Image 1 (cartoon, rainbow, N blue to C red):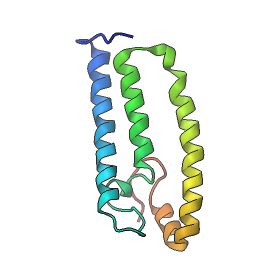
Image 2 (cartoon, rainbow, N blue to C red):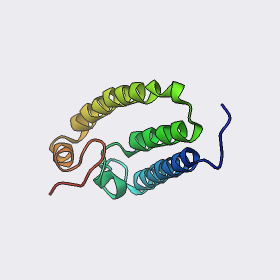
Image 3 (cartoon, rainbow, N blue to C red):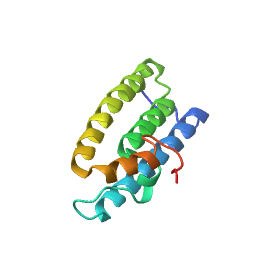
Image 4 (cartoon, rainbow, N blue to C red):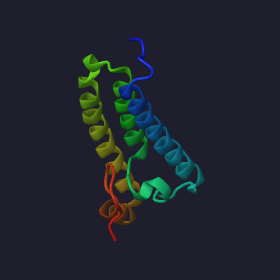
Length: 118
């Protein structure tokens, strides 16, 4: 589908896609500077336990909005369902590996996005 540049949906979608890209890059940086064997809990990981998935979802919505390809509107819903299953699986593995320290991280950090709890 050709993009209709110069339209409000295009620029709004592009802005949303760029926000998703920024979240992705912050998550990659946080993961890169965290020592091996430690829980990712700094940077963007203070606001979301799964910022990579969050960034992909934001970019999908941005691309959908920019392209105005409404026929693909059901795709994000399927993507959300798959990410939720995958995130739960990863959290079980992290809890098995890190125990109570991961449970504490889970209690203060939302799964998808939000302000950290004290």
